[in-house]
Structures are given as structure tokens and as C-alpha cells.
Image 1 (cartoon, rainbow, N blue to C red):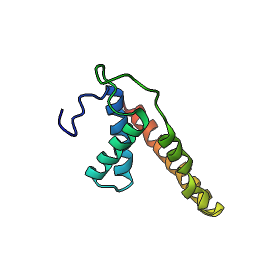
Image 2: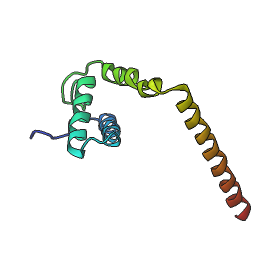
Image 3: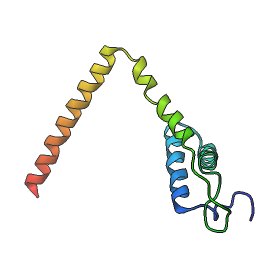
Image 4: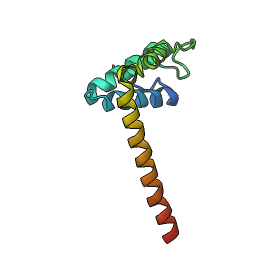
Length: 109
């Protein structure tokens, strides 16, 4: 099996890597680097390929995911009350505006 071959991974592991990769790309990481980090995370959590014939399975460790979840929200915590309130008001205004356009489209149909 050549290096980088993903045939030993389950569908769930592949989906997980894809999801992690998208998250990195949304944060501005390059495509190649995002893919590398995503597969490194999947390997760390699940211990490599899990398809039958690839050895005995082991429990998954979700330490990486937990760490990411803990780190998430730090930016919002640093923002002032005024800034958070302003963005909440803007979001509410946008939701209201979009719901009006949806209701107009329903009436036409």
C-alpha cells in the first residue's frame, strides 16, 4: 500500500477528515495543509485505518475535538459587551429582513 493511500479508512473516517479539512480551509489554511492536518487529526483520534483487515480496532480518543471545542468561543469572550450587542442586533435585523422576503416569495408561488 503506497503512502497516502486511504483505502484502509472507513467512510466515517473519510467524512470526518473532510469536515475537519473544511474547517481549516474556512480559517484560511491552504488546501494541502488543511488536508494534512485533517488526516493527522483522524489518525490521532482513531489510531489509523479501521476497515476490516487493517488490524484490531481500538477505542477512539476525542481529545483533539475536545481541545478545539474548549478553544472555540475565546474570541467572543474577548469582545466588549457593546460589540456583542451590536452584532446581535444586526443579526436580528438581518433575520427579520430575510423572513419578510421569504414570506413574499411564498405568497407569489
